[in-house]
Image (cartoon, rainbow, N blue to C red; front, side, top):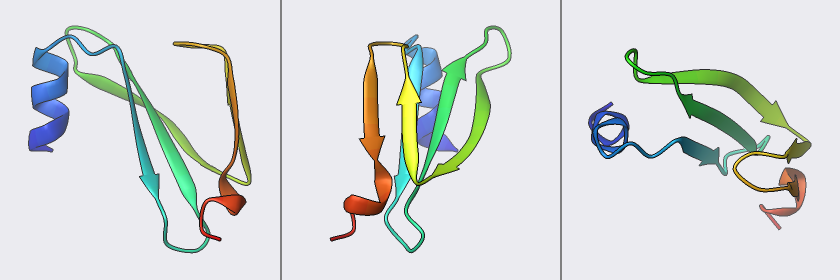
Length: 64
């Protein structure tokens, strides 16, 4: 929670948390001022987004 607060204070708009424990997951957070970060939900398998840049990550391959 401390790191999230520091990132929000620094106005970092997107913050991703990757958990490498099986199953590998990614929690995408978006800065939603004035409330801090809004979690967009855990994703497993494949993560696809256009913000802050287009990316497609195959999370299940990160643990290999």
